[in-house]
Length: 512
Image (cartoon, rainbow, N blue to C red; front, side, top):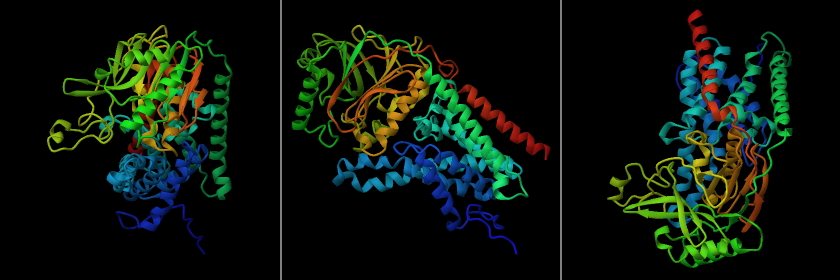
C-alpha cells in the first residue's frame, strides 16, 4: 500500500492553474511562522525552519502552481510582519478606522506579489526539483533587494531582519541586510538541496541539517569574535536625547501641543552635562518660519545647541525638516527629508489631486510635503558631523553611501507614534541597529514616543527609553569604526553572488 502523502508536500496536480485553497493553507501557515523571527517576537530560528519547509513544498510543486503557493506564504509573512500598518488608521477611528483592514489586506497582498512573481519566474527557469528549490531561494533573496527600489522602495520585513539580536547580524558589516537574507535562505535550502532520496526521512534530511547547523555555528562564532573586539573610545561629545511621548491623536491638538512643548523645554533644561540636545521628528506644532520668538526660548532651555524636527514652508511648498540651532535661536543649518512616504507624506500626482481635495494621509501641512535635495552632512555646535535621517529614511541603507565625506555618526529623528505599540516601533529600531552595523557608525535615535536609543557602531543598544514614556537620555556619543566592507562596496558583491547562482541554474537547464 502506498504511504499517504504528507500535508507539507503539495500534490503534483494534473491540471494546470490554481491549486485548491486547502492546498494553500500550509503555505499561509508557514509564512506566518517564518515571520515570528522578526521583532518583536525575535524567534530567529523560526524563519529558516519555516522557509525550509516552504522551499520543499515549492520545489515539489508544478511550475504552474508555484506562484500560488508563494503568494499564500508571502501573504502570511507580510500580514503578520506588517499588521502595525493598521495603527495610523486608528489614530482617528471615526474618520479612518474603516480603512484599517483594507490597508493590511492590500499591503500583505502587495508584499506577497514580491514573492509570487519571482518564484513564478524561477520555477520556469529551473529543471528538476533541486534546481527549482535553488532558483526559488535566489528569487526570494532578489525580491528582498528589489523591494528597496520598486515604487520608491519599501525594504521593511526583509527575510534577514530576524538576526538582529544575534551575533549573526554582524555579517551585515560585510554583506548588508541583503546578505543576511541570503544566509537565511541558504540555511533553508540546504536540507532540500542535500536531500538523499530512497532513505528514511531522518537519514535523508541529516546531511542538510548538519550543514545548516555548521554554517549557523560558523557565522555565529565569527559574529561573536567581532563583538568581542574592542571598540574605539567614545567621543568627547555628550548628547541629551529628549522623548516627549506626544500621543499621535493628541499631538496636533492646540491645548495638548502646548503641554508637549512645555514638556520638551522641561526635559531639555533638567540638570546635567550635555553638549547637544536632540528633539524628535516634528517635535513642535508650528512652522520654523513662525517661531522667531520661540527659537531663543528653545535653545535657552537646551542650554546650548539644539537639533530638532520641525516643519517649514518655502513659498507654497512644505518640508519635513531637521533644524540645527545655536544659542540665541540662530538657525545654522536645515535638512529636508527627501525620501518621503508615498500616500503618507506625499501623494503621487499630488498637485493634480490637490485640486479635488485629496491630500497626503500623515502630512500636517498643505496637501503633502515636498522632497528635499538628498543626503547631506550636518553639524551642530562642537559635535562631530553627522548624517541626518528622518523616520522612514533609516530603512534605506543605500542612502548611507551617497555622501562625499564620511560622517562620524548617524542621527535618526522619528515619530514612531504612527506605528502603534506592538511591533512597528521595534521593527524600526531593529533596522536602525542594522544601519549601524552596516556602516560601522554609531546611531543616535530620537523618537517621539520611543524607542529612543544610543546605539554603538556594532548595533548594540547602549542606552534607551522604553515605548510610551516621557524622559531623556544623557550619554556620550559612541566612537566610530573604520569604514566597513559594505560601506565600500554596498550590495554589489551579494547581487553578483545571486546572479551567478541564477546563471548556474540557467546553465543546468541548457545542459538538460
